[in-house]
Length: 62
Image (cartoon, rainbow, N blue to C red):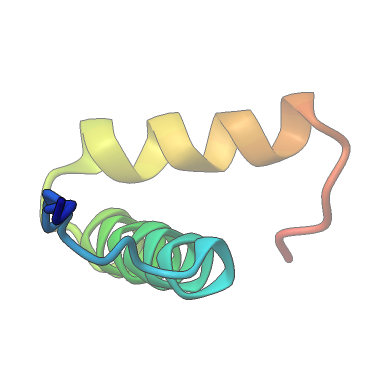
């Protein structure tokens, strides 16, 4: 009598730390792009909206 073993292959999962770091880097990059876009916006509406948020959250801006 012989026994046969069936094996299945599963895709290797990324380590959780690498996935988390990638998500954090993407979020930081997006935040910097948005900050740069609003800070140097030609539109006074966008710039003033960001400026008002800084005052509301009691963060220095001047």
